[in-house]
Amino acid sequence: MNKITEKDKLNYGTLVRKIIRESKTAVLSTCLNKKEWPYGSLVLSCCEHDGSPYIFISELAEHTKAIRNNNKVSIFYENCNSLDDPLAGTRFSVLCSAFEAFEKEEKGLLLNRFLLRHPEAKIYSKFNDFTIFNLFVEKVHLISGFGRIYWLDRNEVLGNKYKVLIDSEQKIIDQINNRILSDPNIIGVDSEGYDFLIKKECFRTEFEIEVKDAETAKIEIMKIIKNKEIT
Image 1 (cartoon, helix red, strand yellow):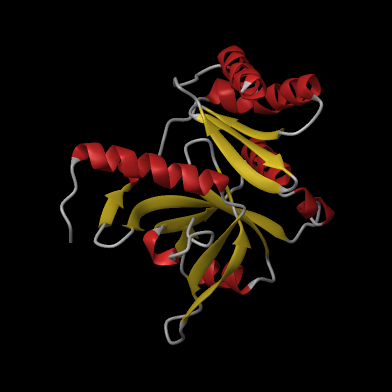
Image 2 (tube, helix red, strand yellow):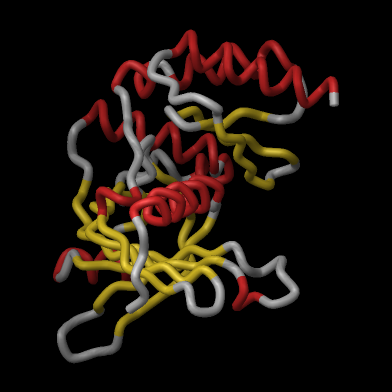
C-alpha cells in the first residue's frame, strides 16, 4: 500500500467528504447471508453534516433484510463518469456499520435533509415500512488515479458537525432561497459549505472558513452568491 503524508490525508479526506456531499446516488453493497454472494445496487445518497452517509430504504429491500442479519456494509462513490478516462478519476468505498435511527428528533432532521436532496421521495416518505439507517464510517479505500491508492481512517475523512447549525439548517435554507428567488436552490448547509440544485443536478460550494452558527452561514452563502453574480 502506498505511503501517504498527513497533508495528503487531510486533502483526500476533504475530497471524500465533498464527493459524498455532492452525490445523489451511490452503490450500496451488503451481505445477503453467510453462504451467498455480496449484493450491490444503486441507492439514493445523503449524508449528515460531518459527511457520514445514511440511507432511507424500504423494509422490503434486499439490503434491509441483509443489514438486519449483518450490519457490515460498503457504499461506493465516484466522480469519474464525465472524464475521458474514468479510471483517472477519484472513487472510493466507505466501509461502514449500519444502525437504524430510532430517536424521533434525529429521524425528523435526517428525513428532512434527505427530502431536500431527493424531493421525488416525498411520495413514499410517510410510509411506515421505510427506515433510515445511519452508516457509521469505519474506514475508506480510496483510488484517485493511477498509483494513488490509500486506506483512510474514520477520523481522516469525517468533518465537524455543530448542533446549533444542524437545528437551524432548514431556517437558513428557507431564508436564503426566499432572498434569491431563483437557481441555485439551496438544499443543505454544513460547517464547510453548502449544497444546491440546479435543474435537479446537485452541486457544492465550499466556504473559505469553518462555519459554526446560522448567522455566519447566511453571511458566507450570500457573499459567495453575490460574488458569482458579479463575475
